[in-house]
Image (cartoon, rainbow, N blue to C red):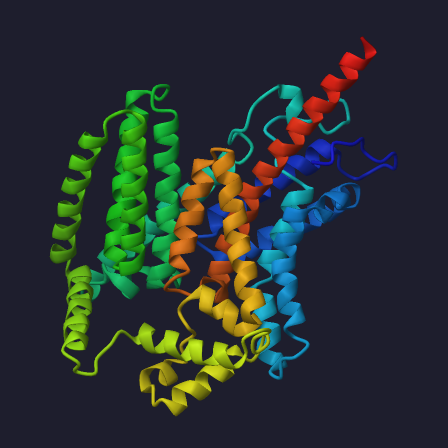
Length: 451
């Protein structure tokens, strides 16, 4: 993006050095993201300083005025618009701060994309010069760093649970206790681990014929470890989402290879094994049985329901009163609390729950405009990834889109850092490939004209 010559004025660092720092800091950020988010934020601050000093923002500013960058940036700016008619400015400013990664990452990555090759002759080389098609070369180191970070985070928590067991005799190897050592809510932790699992599985399948046996074995063990860890975290929705995405992806892959019946058989066996796990693992068994019990009691009209039903009902009540522009950036929770009080939702009021659904959360806050913009924010990249055969991006979007159904992911820092970064990283790759294609056509046209 922005394949132009460097400014003539002297800079402290060369373009090559700026690009190297850019990549290393993004790798460090992705590594620290599941481990120490505060240090990860420091990496982004340093990366932002490097980005500004490199001058790429000024040289490539026009690239940010194209439709996709405007969509990404506009999604965040709409929350600023919501500040115009909000009454709770303190809460509103906190929401803006939490969602800041949704602005920073598009600005930085779209104007300063990662390269899969060095800089030469004092000029930024473009991907067209390598005559290559769309691939993951430029973002592969970042994805690997993230996967390693998730592995260390899971091993650290597992080790801490073992130590706790010997100290207290209690089982810490499930649900909130397992992720508490890193301050991780199980839903977010399992979402992080699930995406790491997708990364390892994707590159294993993609390069299966070229990978040596020991690496195949190591990747398979890592996939198994991640899946077991997700089961131990006992986040029911993430387990369901991960199993569903893996199952559908596997059946599509088997269909393409002419082995659909075999794929159905393997899937059926996997479902049985998952069912056994749900009934065997202690923490997961308790949560599964509790869910079944609530469903049975609700079917018998005993007045017991999943708390999310009340939350979604309250959110819909607020939406109906503020359909077009919503409550404003800072007033969403205040309006929900009023409904909780009116309907005597004691637990929801006590825990100060949000709607636990990002689609409803956006519509409550910013009205139908915000709800539709969120759908565009997900569906347009999904279609572009589908056209480009960017299967890993499709897996990420599927994970996020389904997770949005039961969690307000973008209400937390861990959620916005995760979504904002990888959403921008994958889209950066697609936009870069589009520019490469246009440059190739332009150069070919000039060459033909000269002849």
